[in-house]
Amino acid sequence: MTAALLPILVVTLAFVIGYAIRRGSICIVAATHAFVVQRRSKRLRAFGVAVAAAGLIVIPLHWALPDTAMLSLSFPATLTVIAAGAIYAIGARVNNACAFGTLAYITGGKIVYVMTLVGAAIGASLALFYQPLWAARGTPAPSSLYDPTPFSLAVLALFLGIVLVTAGRRGRVWWQDLRGAEKDRLGPFRAMLIIGVFSGLLYAVMGGWTHMGLLSRNAGVLLGQTTPKNDLLLLLSAAALFVGGLAAAIRSGQFQLSAPQLGEFARCLVGGTLMGAAAAVIPGGNGIMLVHGLPSLAANAWTAYAVMTLVLCVTFLSRSRNPA
Image (cartoon, rainbow, N blue to C red):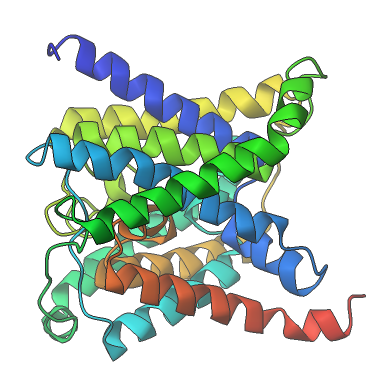
């Protein structure tokens, strides 16, 4: 690929991801709330589609281009990783949004969530100064999917099955929606499928790319060998994510600037700081784990993501008993 085409590809992929995040209302906090309080698992199950879709892109590309499309290294599932997953969940709960949800809120006009990004940068930077956390995380190993073994092919077949079943069950509805009103939401399954595929492609092109990674280059994208290959491309991809989300909000008529209250600044700052610190230790926030760590079968990603989801569910138990 020529140097001139690479920035265009990166911007296009990131724009689509940002658009899908906003239109699909993607957020693990909202998904766990719906699961516990409303007894609806649709949003939570949609995250599995993103993992499968990303895996279908990242794994074969790694086998074909091992020096370009790298799988996540697998850190041991230590107590440190478990604690970091729990802290990330608490931070997301305080913030009332995960990394995806934060992007959706900002592009919808809730500017107070910029403080979440500021907090994430602070938290990740602080975590870097406390070296025992890194030592306690353990020594990483290559992904069990590194080579096309029978096990790797079985995992790839599982991912393909998940995507095909999802598309088969919902494809007709998706086709009908294409002719519907533009204000209709993209829906969690369709949005997650798009996010998984395009995120996998973007990782193959440039490694770490998220807005959290932009704010903490040395902590937010520490997934083994996965590091931004070009600082300018990282900046372009982060900007395109926001532009894509903003375009989705404006096109659907959902963009509305809101004046934040004083307490919201502190809430977002504290929540973002906890999320950033935890993401540096795991390593990776929920977005990075979802589209790279989990498809790579990284032990730290699966452990942290499971703990994060469980802790978030527990925080909503009181509401499930008293929905009002």
